[in-house]
Image (cartoon, rainbow over all chains, first blue to last red; front, top):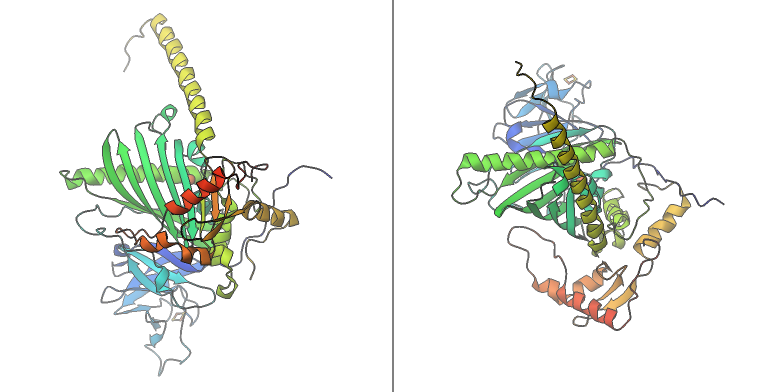
Length: 390
Length: 100
Ligand code: FES
Ligand SMILES: [Fe+2]
């Protein structure tokens, strides 16, 4: 028998996770137009009724399959572009302008909707269970008031990976060094119930010239919790040369197909005292760009990696298997959730050896770069000044 | 309905090895909650709670939710002290087996 280890690519689940999924910032849907959101293997139509309340239905009309996202908002209802059937947010057909009466069976798929922290959350459950209000993400005190900047919001399409790849990041200590250019000096996980948390402290890599989180003057203290399968709130305290900022980053995704998802992220910054709004917004934008670069670094890996059910771990790795055990609770029938999926589990990664080795590697990189710079400086001295050209 | 189905029986063994193997039972010296503990090195700790142990932990019961909506308790200091004591007593073997 061979000792060669094989990758078990497994099979991806046919269903999409049960739980709350964020569709975006509520204001984006309040323009009187229907919006299309690709989700759960299909398309949703999202609009605001005359009271500004957000309604979400399956995107395709139950009459002849017209695309409701290309329809028109008429009063409180969405009108189909094909034959003008009017669908209410409760999923019922309210009127057919050319018909004597509306068929009793004219009901379509609705998505229970909640506005939380200025964002639209919808409940998805293939079993058709009641939306669980107990497990909504928490309300963020002060967010949406003058104390914080407005949410930034960005979307990245990931056409070729299962969304479990992004959830795996919760436990992936070492990728913060290689992909995000930071030293994770402290790294802890806690899973409990529907929540999975990562506690991390990190500083930037000085050999990466400010790429990713690679700014040696940047110290991050981060606490990030998934509330259910797809919605993470990340509380960050950043220290940049003694300048402290509190950032709240939301990292969430919508599965679009069995092997694709849309990653969304937005952040707001607690306005530092004595700082004008414009500067605060500028700081928010800076951090948004930085985390955006970080997500793109992840995406580049996901698009090319193999799915793996049997990762081979070393002692410095986080609890990948326990995280996935936790994540499975959202993919099995509610009746099939077993205690070990939701029981509290804690894991502290020993980062000492990793950081010793990484420090040494970074020192080497810096020394090599210094030597190269010195060599370049010498050649420049020897070369005669070129005549100025325009 | 099954999800994320592994294709190899070895994967099931890996799942057991990484999640359940080598857990040593430790009781909290204060509330007597029993948890499973593994220490692959001095600074590494893995703690598997059960529903019953969690209910028993007085420390968590006392901690209220943090004011800003964060609902996760990082750790119980009393349990941590109990685990340290168990390590001192030699009840917990420190060391990993081939990465798990
Ligand atoms: S398909 Fe929608 S009204 Fe006919
Ligand atoms: Fe990442």
